[in-house]
Length: 383
Ligand SMILES: Cc1ncc(COP(=O)(O)O)c(C=O)c1O
View 1 (cartoon, helix red, strand yellow):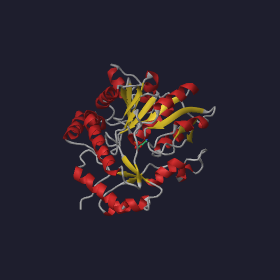
View 2 (tube, rainbow, N blue to C red):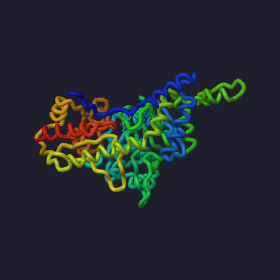
View 3 (tube, protein in one colour):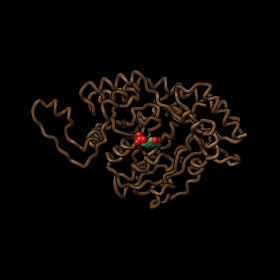
């Protein structure tokens, strides 16, 4: 029996040829391929500017650092995300203030943000969880009213879309807030192995992030080469090594070309899961809001309270039938690393989703037969 993985990257001859081109060019880190990747990614998003970096986590860290966040500042966000979201807030010494999420989207519940605001709140940091757009319309209005910055954690959401005006659909991460961050980890829709990107509109903030990713060096290697004479760089502040390699940049450029096809195929597979599972009495399914279209980076099921089987039992039974799954999104506040930082608010929906949801296999290239195997195994287990 062949194993069905939970995810599989779409990497082919085009990416292999691009990596080869970069390797043989003699310039393998943050050079012309990364610069072209940034331009092409920005064009894909309709974003004015984009800065590449080494991961989605690095992108979050750079975004919060460039907004000058530090100790004493508070960031309203969710616990219900990959731990990178909350960790990035702690990297800059600020405090994450966790707000609960909506049951059917897994995204921050905008109704609850007001109660979490304090005079120290500076930023609202919102994931578009697993590719599902969060309620940016209401979040942006709240942020404007209270003079807060909005950072979109679009790590999972490349290719997702949002409508903020009737009939007008735009890519998530244009950005609609101040900055949006992306991940190119292999479980994401586009991959460069590891990798990240930030889109934004403010040239000064973008330039600061571009410096911070290379130890805040005042002149890049390319700028020093172009200078014509001998020039020395300076280091005005403490930065990081968050560079992306040119090999990854070259691969990323090929991935950008694939995006429309990859998203279309994910949406087809998600629609098939929904059709097959929506009448299952023990399951709830994720729901797109009318103003949002997911890229279906992941499709998850939620076991209802009355379901006789627990999450781990269902996952184990699927594994025994050769089907790999992962549990739903984690909650940072329940991890030992967050023991010193208890949540100010109860997070019952976040905890329920962590305990009761399961991410099913979904990847372009998944055959209809494979998907039917997943569905019938699940039906059998939940019978
Ligand atoms: C919501 C979210 N934010 C941030 C990240 C971090 O991205 P990376 O793994 O590229 O550092 C992830 C990765 O899984 C994520 O899902």
